[in-house]
Length: 410
Image (cartoon, rainbow, N blue to C red; front, top):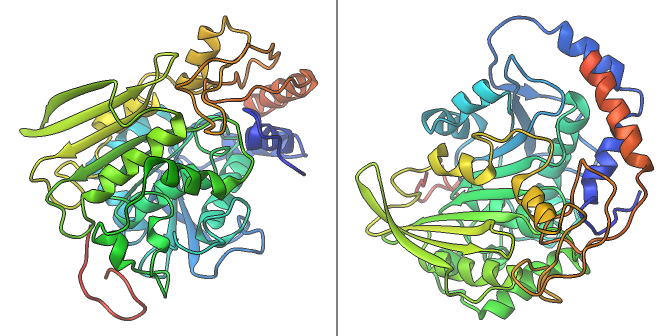
C-alpha cells in the first residue's frame, strides 16, 4: 500500500490496519494481562518484516496501565550499549516513571553492532531498510499489537542514539512527531568516510560542514518528494564534548532551520540553569506558536551533557507531561490557527512551517488534523468513521568497530 504524502502518512495506514481482525483480540489481551509489575522485555519474533538486519532486536516496556491509544517513545542506545543501558538512563532521567504514570509505551531497539548504522544508503532512504527501517518496523509492530496511537510517536537517544534520532526524523517524518537527541550529528553527516558503518572520523571531529541549504537538501533527499509534516526536534550538546565535536550542534541547527524554513537566527535565545549548570537555549517558533527547534548547548559541558537523557524538558517538548490526547499538540495548534479546518505549510521545497501559510483545506478527520508543516491534501472522511469504530471496539475489549574498542562514550 502506498503512503499519501500528507498529514495522514503512515498514521492512516496503521489505523486501517488496526481493523484487520485484531481489535477484539487486543481487548481480550489487555483485560487478561497478568497483574505483575511491568519490566523491559525482549520481543523475539513477530515484529520483523523480512528485511531487517540480523543484528537488530526489539525490546519494549508496556506499563501495567497501558491502554489502546497510548503514546510511544522510542529509546535508542549509544555505541557499545544496549537496550537495558538506555532503559536505565531513561529510568534515572524520570522517563520511565512518566511512562508508568501516563501509560506510555516504550519501544527500545538494540543493535548487536557497536554503533547504529546511520550512514548507509539503505538506512538513509525512506523505505530502504537498514537499521532505521528496522526501528520503524518495531514502531509498526507496537502500534498493531498494543493499539497504540500512530499520531503520538516520538524518539530519544544519546550519542549514536542521538544520531539515530536525527536520522529517523529526516528519513521517516511520516512516522514521528518529534525527537530529542543528546550529542548526535546532523542527518547524513555520519556517512562521510565511514567504511564499516561504525565510525566517521570527519563527522565526529566536526570536519564535515555544509551550508544550511546543503544540509537541508541532504535531509530532504532521504525522502524524495515528501512535502508533509516535519517533526520538531530538541538538540542537546556540551560545547566541551571531545567525543562528538560540538561543531555538530551548529551544523544540526543549520540543517533543521533550513528544513523548517527559518534562518539560523533563533526566535528567542535565553540562559537556563538546570541542576546548577547554565545552558544556552535557542528556540525557533513557527507561525502557529509551536517551538519546532529547541537547541540546548552547555558551556564546558561533556559528551551527552550533564543532564543526559533527562525527561525534565524533553517530555514537555513532546507534550507528554500533560497532553495525552489523540493528536500531537503541534498538529492541533496549527489546526486551531487555521480555524480548525486544516493546516498550513511553509516555504516551498522545504516542507517548512516557518514560511507563508497556504490556504486552509477542509479536513474532516478529527483524529489527525494536519499541522503547520503539512501540505494538506483533501481526503475522504470515511476512513475516520472506521477508525473510531475500531477504537471503540478495542477500548471495549564498547563503542565502535567489530570486536575493536577504542573508547566508550555514553
